[in-house]
Length: 604
Image (cartoon, rainbow, N blue to C red; front, top):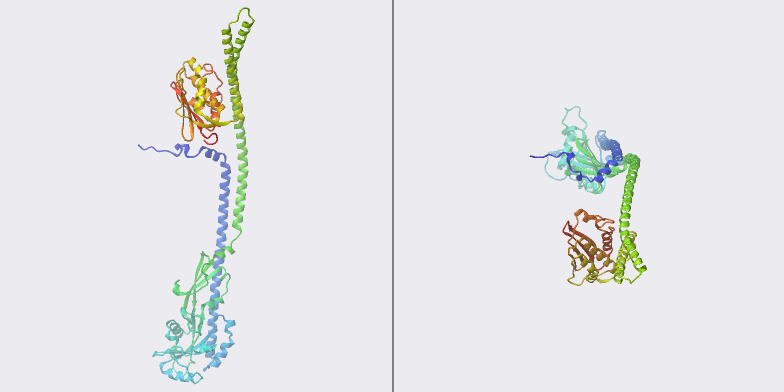
């Protein structure tokens, strides 16, 4: 059967306890930060949205201004051609000189940038071709001809072209009906009687464009004066010709003016309603300039019967120039307010936490003080007991010695010797207790000094064991030392002997007369000393604490001592750069293992 676990049943280990405690203590501060950040984000978003809307409106206005400006420029060109058309409408015969004088009076380069050439192309029927060529040759152009050659149902021939430069004279006689785009525009102008524009054309001749760039031509039809005596004729029969002007897109756009054009706003013009590379007439976009594609708008423009598609695009600099400082101000202000709220709330939380911590610290210090007082009392009780025993024995032996020496008769030298030996043992015990207390004091103050020298651990161990032979024999303990080979290292002899002595003394005390085995061995870097007894042993809990100060695994009533031996031993072993461990089983004895680096302290 499946067992479901609710979120409340998940183990606390998934989130560290210190993190949970931190979050609980600072919940108010973080709540203030979240609220402040939320308000700041909403305000910044609102201001940013307003700024984007203003940018969009400004961009829309600029695109509208650009479209209107281009429309007005094209209307101006059409009006100019209609003015030239008026020259033919007001005169039954216009010659080259009259046409040139009129066009030159317009000052095209200065007043109409982009409109470099204006011309007139005459409409001819096939039967009029020979007469026409002869008439034009008679005006001083002996090499004139209509070209390209070939039989067609109708012809047009450029007869006037201003400015009348030698290079432009080469275009005289050209039949523009032979080029499809020009033909379509001319026929549309013929049928409608209105100005007509070509689609995208490549301006190849010098009289159209010296650089061969993209452009278009405008045509205005010119009709003969109506003959009232005759019935009305069709437009084709009345057609006299076309006033025309080739216009290069680069020149036309150069004269275009609207805010930001070529600085922050780019314009691309396509012939027709589709945006394709083949229909591209003009673009102001410079390769490599970063664009802001979110600001892009398309407009349609009617140009003398043709439709253009205008695409306005903003550059990245448009965003930079229109960036408002309101958003940073709102964000910075919001962050400052949020930080202020956080600091105020945080200070309050810290004050409360400090008060709680002070109370907890006071409770901890009080507990430690009580524990220290209890440890002190226990220590004083144990120390008093430990010191009283040898002192009492010494006092008793001295009293007996005093009586023997004051008594009459011969003195029993054997008894005197025994009492002196007892005094020596008790004095040694007192010295050991005092030395232990002094060692603890030195270790606590970090004033333990080491005199390092090259020593043989096996030799030092055997010497220490020999000093315990008498005590071991008295207790019926078999003490064995196993040193398979010489183990040499750099240690302090006095402290090393003290470590071995403490471990042997401890093994004999708690061994209950069972054998004590000592083994010394080493590897390439460390020496190992093992002292094993077969006595009362230790529980796992006692094995973890017996190396502490004043810690004892058994009652002081049954086993003497201050509870400092193993504490001092551990401190000395660590001072020598090693470590000590114990493995034990209750009732089966204990094994103390000391590992020391052969090279001495600071290398293990």
